Length: 359
Image 1 (spheres, helix red, strand yellow):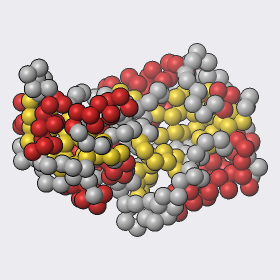
Image 2 (tube, one colour):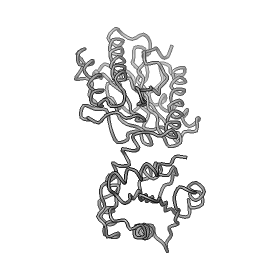
Image 3 (tube, rainbow, N blue to C red):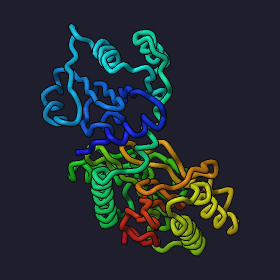
Image 4 (cartoon, rainbow, N blue to C red):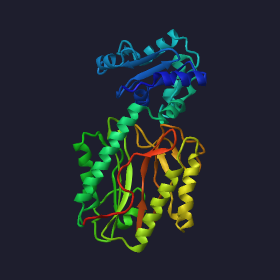
């Protein structure tokens, strides 16, 4: 079971914090491995506590034996009162809080109740979440395998005359059949000129020969996400379509070839962007190169010209260059990559070269 308590405690010591209060659902699960819709986790430099209600109490006690002390909140013992007691007992003087997901009103209410000034500390957790642990990697591999299999299936089903909405619905139904919690974002299926809008939402546009077909798809399995984009064609592409696709694929591969621990993320963006710009399509690559992913489809961190942070082993992010020509077509090729000790591993298993659907 996922358990990052010790990692958090080391980070607290380095940040000179006595404890951190976690109420965000994803942060709580990252810390303890237990999913719940409500509750609070307190991690001090020496102990961990999980506060929950009657819905989860028995399951939490069974799951977190030896990991965290479990407390039951109720009308007689409200959560904030229990938190206050833990902080007093542990003699917490400097408390970290989740300033990014806690409202200002709630943040200040905690400060007044506890008699402490909360220190913004959510980046401490988000930075730890960026480098995935083996248990997390296993879940993300599984989610990506399901996405790979679903993509292979849809390519045997799609035909001229189908609508974008019908194809997207088929993809989502395959995710449900594989036992997923659902898609990790609204499934994108774009035909022809619709693909020139990077985040076009599927509508009743009908597939016809000559269209490019852009699939941007991912699922949530065991609360971890996958993501992949492939652009194929309905019938043989034109010379221009094939050339743009080849350019985007090469930009994707140029960035991936540079990935290793210590490389700046902005340099990955530059590697892909410079190739596309040199070919005369720079203005049509109008978004960052990639984003981080994990329990949510867009975690903190990105691969962009503004991010000078460096790659670390365990990080998973997307590499997704694109060229979008208004009124004509769009091409995007997206992989998820894992930074290894010596380079990177591409999680996707589907070929990045274009192919023909609706044969």
